[in-house]
Image 1: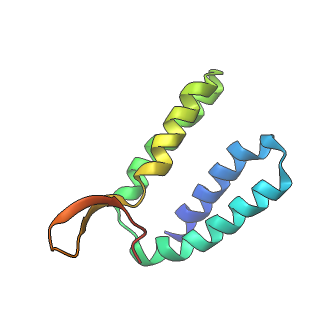
Image 2 (image 1 turned 180 degrees about the vertical axis):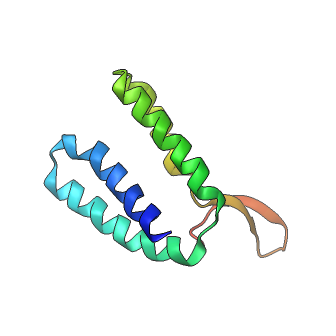
Length: 101
């Protein structure tokens, strides 16, 4: 899990570095470091396969120069982490975005 998390950070850093915005990149690095704590505490084995699939699709689109497609895949990619049925106060599960941990 630790090696996968480090590779995930490297992947996102690699595709974001060309923006050249040092403060933004530093903020994203900080967010990755903070989110790693939650990732380690709430790890779900299904995340690797889905995330790796998304990363491959993003890279394929970027290699083909399809930046709009890569951005669309990335948008869906960052939205699904943490999304899932969570119990509401009423006890009825509902689909929400939540960082578990």
